[in-house]
Length: 247
Ligand code: 6GU
Image (cartoon, rainbow, N blue to C red; front, side, top):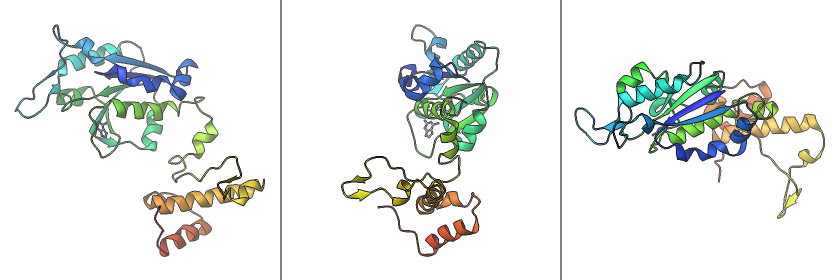
């Protein structure tokens, strides 16, 4: 997968060159290229923004430098990139969206700033608009990193496929609790079943815990998963009694 990122602040993307994303790149499975929008700016100051027509606060990223930058970055590879604009007006990101986007060989992530970009670029060159949630950030850089990380870890071979399949939001429910040594920490023991070596019972316990966790913390997720009769009783009982909230 190739990710081109168009931004005014390429220096903030260091986290995409550490840890799992770094390994994905050195193994050749992923290529991340950063491009500074200012390289397509006007004049001595390489200006890329101007005041909004109609007045009002803030600045707008102008159509001309953006169009030139998007076209120049597209031309760097014969594969056309899907152009994705990170904006609070976009569709809220979900694991299902990340899974669909991860099937693409190439994406161009466009980071907005200030009051946003000229509407004509949205209409003509942007194919998808993504938000990472209902809160305000100063620019599209952190959202682009969030999206890039979520995409990179789904590229085949980047992480163990079994661990991807088991994760929260891939299974549709939250994860079960995890424990490691020691078996007793400050008087608190690991649940007995995990020490039993009985894989069938361990799997059953993990599924139960995952369902209970989900019923308590994210009951909205349960509406979308298929449960068998025993599982329905488990979470149903939990709901009838009123779910104790997390401390
Ligand atoms: Cl994609 N951009 C900005 N600026 N703020 C956000 C966002 C995006 N998603 C949530 N908040």
